[in-house]
Amino acid sequence: MVIVCLLGPQHLLSQNENGHNLNELHETGKHHLALFLGNTHNDGINAVSVGIDYNYRWHPNLAVGLLLDHAAGSLDETLLALTASCHPISKLEVLVGAGPEFTEEGTELAFRIGLLHEFELGSITISPVANLDLVNGKDVWVLGFTVGRWFGH
View 1 (cartoon, helix red, strand yellow):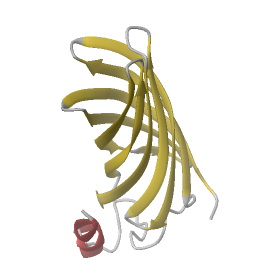
View 2 (cartoon, one colour; view 1 turned 30 degrees about the vertical axis):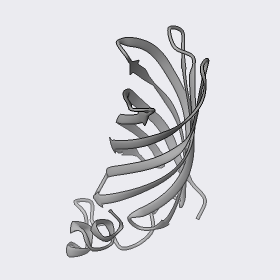
View 3 (cartoon, rainbow, N blue to C red; view 1 turned 30 degrees about the horizontal axis):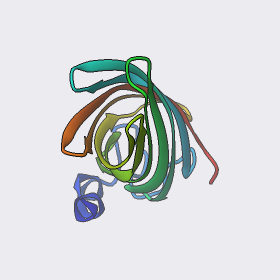
View 4 (cartoon, helix red, strand yellow; view 1 turned 45 degrees about the horizontal axis):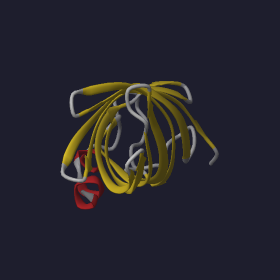
């Protein structure tokens, strides 16, 4: 994943459709904080999910972060994960992460694979998100959207 992001299509093109240099760090900041709202689907049960995500983009195409997601109602699950993400093409983010998932039955190690597309309005982002959590041999789908903001240089 890192090699694709470092040597991917963004480096073959020096500018995006708006004329911004893609080899520079994000023009509105290195830090991104977002709120998540969506649905968690686990073993045929759906629950409302809310969360908060933080990312630090240390390279034009690479970021590290932390997320906290909670599914409430029919489910009671909370995921706390360290993440790494890359932007193989402009505005598309591929995410991987791992961390504990806390449930009524105990704590399990969860792995997350995610995909999102950023729509930017200045420093504000709105992103549809699709995540697959792998927990104890089960596939848990988390679908929704984030609203976030870039800040700090």
